[in-house]
Image (cartoon, rainbow, N blue to C red):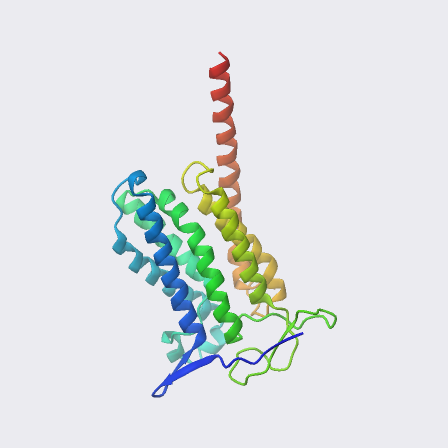
Amino acid sequence: MITISIDPIAFHIGSMIIRWYGIIVALSVAALIVWVWRQIRRKWAELPKAPEITVIVPAILSGIVVSKLFHVIDRWDYYSQNPGEVFSGGGLSIYGAVIGTSLFFLIYSKVRRSQFGFFADLAAPGIILAQAIGRIGCTINGCCYGKPALEWLPWSIVYTHPDSYAPLGVALYPAQVYEIIFCLIGFAILLKLRGRLKPDGTLFLVYLTSYSAWRVGIDFLREGTPFVLGLHQAQFVAIIVLAITIPILALRTWRSRQQAKLGVEEVDG
């Protein structure tokens, strides 16, 4: 059993409370921006067209808006009674941020006729790395906590600080830590797969599919509000995402094998 007694409040500015969660989430966003910028500079000669770097800002804002929207829908009982909290900086859904940013870039690529897949593949490892950093903030904050753990589990976590969002003195599954580990492993795998998957956008699809599958599973160990059929909101959305991405990946894999087969036949001929 691991005890977490860290004060989740970093400091105060007047009456404003600054939590470690907000600081670490800001660091995760900064890490993503730095990652994308470095990848763009590294791949400059291969870019389909000169990138519009300023588009990163509205993309991140779109992610924040959808992230908050997901959280408000999920916790509507609370926000309907506290409407002012809708505009607070807390209560963000990581999955909502991923979906919001992805949708923005997808729409933007259609309007501007840019290569969504190429840039999505560049960003994919950075996205999952940023998620790992963000979950450190969740671990300190006590949000996104797991259900009560089995008594024999040696690595369950117990929160003791009164400002934590998790229930105090209860041994919980370390759901946030599990996700940090998953994201770091995913980061390493995506780095290994870079440049090996065609056409452009396939690496991002692998990321989106694997993370969606993960959320379906991990949320059975997390506390949350039942959304549809007893599933959490993230699980329901993840299943929809999987229903879209798995057929696309299967079709791309089949096409890739067919093209490779045709290539071999042409060489033999």
